[in-house]
Image 1 (cartoon, rainbow, N blue to C red):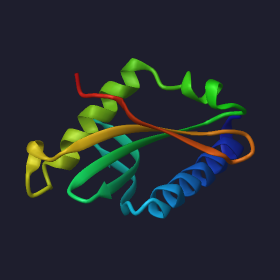
Image 2 (cartoon, helix red, strand yellow):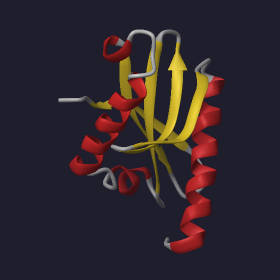
Image 3 (tube, helix red, strand yellow):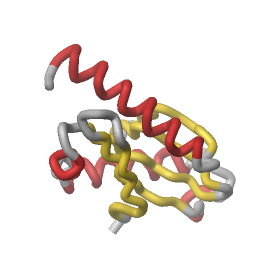
Image 4 (tube, rainbow, N blue to C red):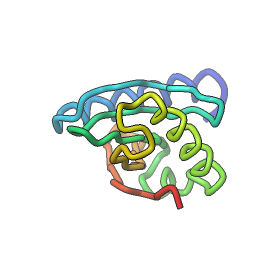
Length: 118
């Protein structure tokens, strides 16, 4: 999936995932937040915890999971650090990096704490 079709499919996947999180009592904070380090698909709040969510869509969960590479994780961590600069607790904020997988029929699978800043 490339071009305009891929763009719209990604937007729909992000909306589906955001709804999944809000259904589980998370509060929406930002969508497609961009810092110098890169872009974060979704930022949610779970109480005092900030949850950075990378959304990957593909025909299957397994295929979607393979689309997150270490270099992208590093960019997400850098962007997350920038976002935290505006939080009351700054870098001491409790954070989690989740990977949200969306399959070809719109089902969602969340991998909480999929990776860390290390």
